[in-house]
Length: 363
Image (cartoon, rainbow, N blue to C red; front, side):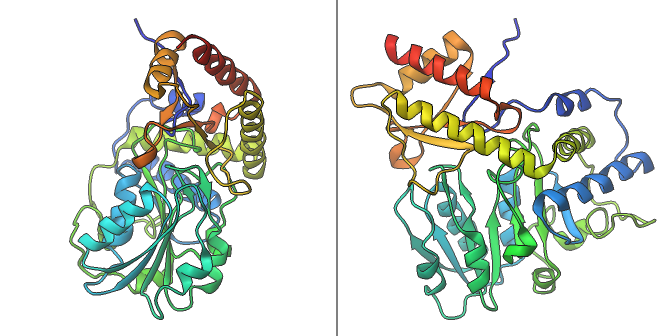
């Protein structure tokens, strides 16, 4: 028996129906001109959701974590100073990946649930090669001011994790001074996990590592197939692209842009506000700092005396509904509730509130 899960965790979310249907379309070869046209259109739509004109904007053939690897492995030279704003799990991972690339990492630690302190990050080193930050910290539900970091970055490259923000909240890579950005398909874009939407500016590409440690994620090699190759007559074979996933992303992006990107942002904002108000009316306390809470990912404190895992298990077994545990030190004291993609709707909010109220009354 196939169960339809209601995916209200930190990702993946339930995909847009158009994205699911596209997975069943007849398969094409990765060098078929018809597929390359789909790829080019997908790259063009990614530019719109990123808010960029970067020629090198493409879906990497891997999940968002590979997007993080690609961002650092292509731009960090041994000994480069990389300042990383750490306000959650994914800031910590940035530090790990940058260090593996040979960087001198300067971690600027923050309390989890708080936004990035822009002044402290910009003052952490006088001349870093890269400043890195997470726009929407998936582990805490906090949003940070990327535009302010971009305004003060100086000669540094600004590297941004937009995994949970792209397609859900305002994101303007060019306007905010983002030089390198990576994301994932499985959250607000409403597509299954499997691709990493990626963008890099000409400025950052000019400073790239000529021969990075990763062959698969080498942007210089990938550019001959997709990215700056978009629309060109000749393509250099690099790898077998996941054509069904690209077709699914194409369908999901078409769905978003047909609705209107700003309308999609507004829909996520309204759903998140409805959920957060409903949780507080139930007597629950929100975790992320007020004024910096993500609408697409709400973090809520587990009430005293409540078994977090038992509640999540009840929701899954009784209602086919998934919410996420917390992360790190907050694994058992916080729940993460996502309203992403097609789940950012009033009826989905009512469903999760009713199911959680039921679980709290029975577990």
